[in-house]
Length: 112
Image (cartoon, rainbow, N blue to C red):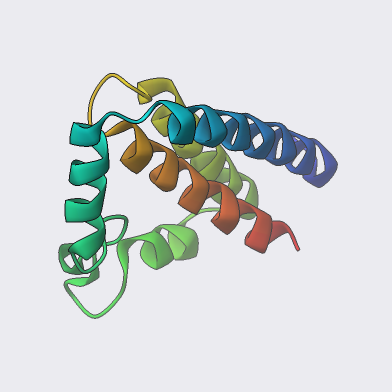
């Protein structure tokens, strides 16, 4: 079983990696990527769109209610890792980083 300290260390390492990638992305964005980013930012919420809230509860909150704390923390950590791993391969690289950051921020919030 992963301890809270281990999860916090993993979260900090992922946050550092995200910050390094963000700096690199900021310095290497193409005009097309910047345009895509501006287009995506203008939408309501790219991380948690309205369809995640159907049924009166946000999906992430339902998952938290059904999981143990360790399971939920693992989900947040691994989902952040998924988005970091997809960086530059699927959606806009900056969008992937923002998604990873959202899950890292949520994990940190859960651990505080």
